[in-house]
Image (cartoon, rainbow, N blue to C red; front, top):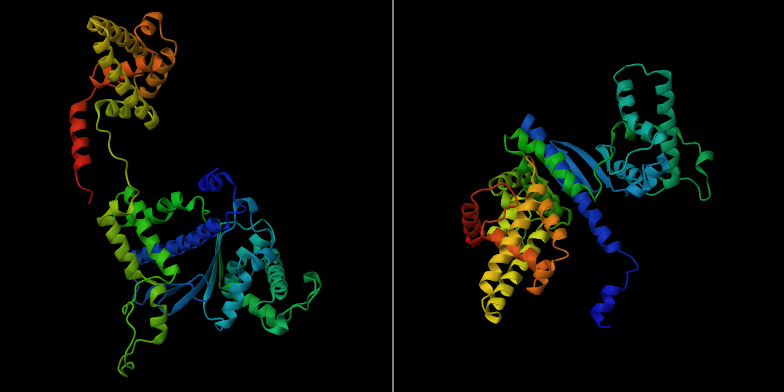
Length: 451
């Protein structure tokens, strides 16, 4: 066994590298969704202040609109793990614990949001997702129902207990002792007040598409509203999504462009230069609204640059006719090969068997009759029927007659003969059309340089 055979034949012990990279790409996609959301809001109501997304700062990213800021934590959860089952799971595995610690560190000034692919389970997790709205109603002076008040107090208490058990980044007075159990803890009033203030500015943005689905769902869910708002056709949404996603893939890795590039300063910064050190440090991980607008406009102007490469058009008459008849690519490739085999057989038969021309004409008449009979069976008045015709021809020719065998023809060569008749426009896999014109355009397109 060669080295490469051993490598390919042995199952790897894990696939963590690819899965980790895929999760990071999912995070970049979620940040790109926020970028498009900011642009959509701008299209509806232009912002006068700065609008930007700062990647990998304090949390997975920060959304800045004017002087406001929102910390965003993105947590992918595999479908096999199900919904977030408890508040404890949201705090420890869902990122709420880290988000709370960061919020405290930033003097409780930003709002906070958890973006996750999973839903919150019925019960405490779903109730916690409702609590921000209940708190806002309460703050506005509206009186809550008794069950709503009970739900609110319970969720605040459970979140505080879970944070005490989480411990990381919290003041020592809020950390549970080693060996403590959550059900025996009694959160202090200062912690309960902090949790209440945190939950009030919290958004649990749940049930986003998973990493397996995001590439397929994102153009429709997140880019199409932009193209529709701008009056562009829906098919450009894929290009818009790819262009914006590329922006965030770079910035999430701190690989965006900077004004200085690789140039280092050689003298002290002049006193009248006001650009802050923090702006310089964050430059390669910031996506501004202008960046998103530029990416969208470029994608709309040059969509082909952001779309997957398209297969080369079929240029042979046989391939074009079978493609129009909705035959599969595999069937078309097989048909092209069988036609060449038949042409080679006919040429060699003509050289080796004197007077074989009459035999060839008889063979082709029989093949044409078979194709005619099967076409009548497969043809329908609406829809494509080329694939059904190809399948029926393949099955009928599996057992060639004795006279065909005597002439050196097996079932595949007979099918190749019908393909040769199709290439001469004597057999069709769809209603008749101007195949010469289509072939001419396809040949021109194949020869044109790619732009």
